[in-house]
Amino acid sequence: MERLLLRWRTRRGHRTAVRFLEMLARAVGSRGWRCVRLYEPEEFPLPVPLLWVYASGVAEDVGVVVSVRAVPGGWAYHRAQRGRFGYLVPCGDAEAAAEQVDLLLKHRMFPSTW
Image (tube, rainbow, N blue to C red; front, side, top):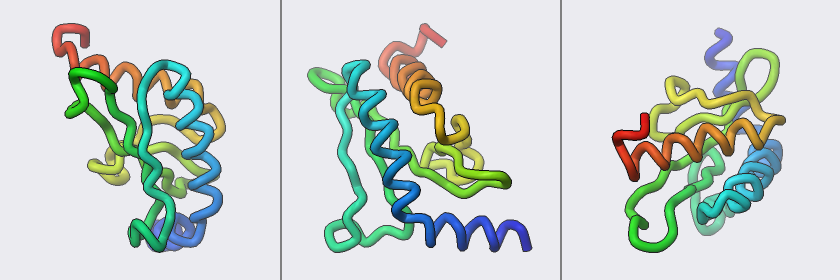
């Protein structure tokens, strides 16, 4: 039952998710990453808003898609490709989320840095 409630909150919380993803976009942008905002329902008819964060320059094929999902007690950033198993950090701390995304992308670009 809780899982259904969390899924419902995630789909109904479009504005909340966009607000948290905007905070993350600013935080990762200050670290030099580029973002594509997949928020507009008319352009991107997706069940949840997404933020694609990727490397600029030579390694443009390196990126991660981040979503915001409802969790017990609030909201959290997740790697969209992994769903609920892609948990990063709770929302509200965009700098910590940016740090996680930064480490993940650096590892993908330079695998020996993990």
